[in-house]
Image (cartoon, rainbow, N blue to C red; front, side):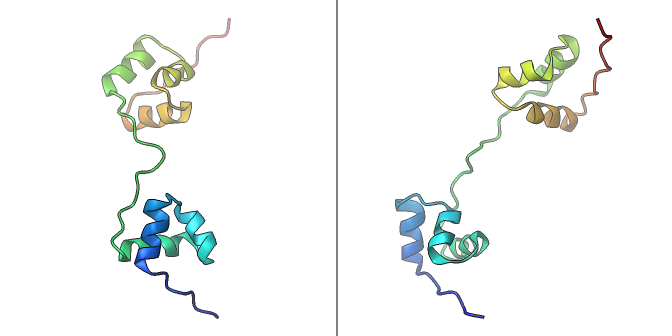
Length: 106
């Protein structure tokens, strides 16, 4: 098996910080896995950038009120916070907000 060339830290820093290339793109250039690039970045003390998706603070009381008291659909709550329905449902479970019963059919 052929060993991968070790990319100099200065080159990694240039690609990652100056050119703003992602780990996957650098891995394509070098011909290795993104995990290898991540390891090299850590070894070179190059700080990781923030992820694309920043966690959104959703207040426990506000979610409980909208979901249980106002009985808004999850889709409406998600739209109000600008997140997906899955995010709202995951947060509901994390906050131990009980699932509502099924609504009677009209």
